[in-house]
Length: 460
Image 1 (tube, rainbow, N blue to C red):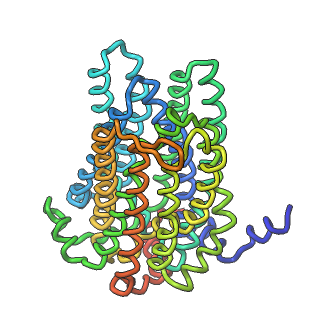
Image 2 (image 1 turned 45 degrees about the vertical axis):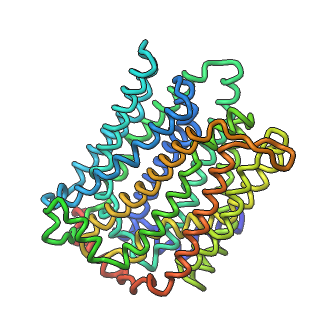
């Protein structure tokens, strides 16, 4: 066994965060294992392959943009989560059932609908209905999972946990994306792409069943919900009460707004206009695993030297110009420009993935955490939905836009990527200017969390 691998396996910090002896550490192992299934599911059924599936179903870029806005719109269902879950001292069954229903409609029903002999408007309506049910079932209760698993993530283990989770998930995503990317290109040339997409989505449903089972294994804590959580408008008074928490939510909103303003049109642009093969896009996305393995230690040192907010600000302000640069990828230059720019982005995205994933925890109040995580979901999806809808509107308005630059012709997608870069820079500037005001309180002690989980752990 290589020396570096032996050192990783005996790393005392990792052994403290992940082991099978202590209830809290064992719970973190189970959450990470479920996350592995989730990463594989995402690799098989979202992003580029979801776009490919919809294109094979006969939808165009506008249809895909409208369908892609449904998850963000349905996220407002989570406003009612604190009220719905408050009567349940134990929530495992209701959370597991809702997640399974969500996966079934997304990965089975939605997958089979294009096989119906229906005209495009009817098919689009049916697919939208299935997507609404899937996302509604998920968003009504998904913040309950976050409140449940938050008990396992006190401050002093969080950076190691997030980095490890990101690294392991990225490794699974890398394998999934590389294999399916190569297969999709091969099948696209000589086979039936629609059948291929159906098969990988049904495989994803099998993994989804396993994911739900593993997610249900960690013991539930004693939930600390505020008494007035029973009111349907409680979440708004909660937001008004916790100003510092909502300050970090502004960063979450701006980041998601920027991330989604050009995402779907850019994927379609790369595939249809530039002609970038699936394997190149998937391979670069999959290579994030290697970047995370190499650069995560350096980014964690910066977090300890500075703090979460300053590290995010520096990373995103350096990242923003490269987002704009991607808008100038063409048929003539994509072989060197696309991998070159994406590679530089991925170095910075290691720091962003760690800091962005911690934003919800930075100023999370000690009570009413279901409401806190619900707000995080609403704000994240509101930013993403705004970006998606703004992107769709701009694509419709500027679909005939053409301009010459550097001897090449560009269109609305280039404009979208420039707007994306500007919004990313704005999110970093806000984090930098508000750094002092949003500095988090001291985190709870690990022992208190472990004691609480032990009290709720089943005998044996």
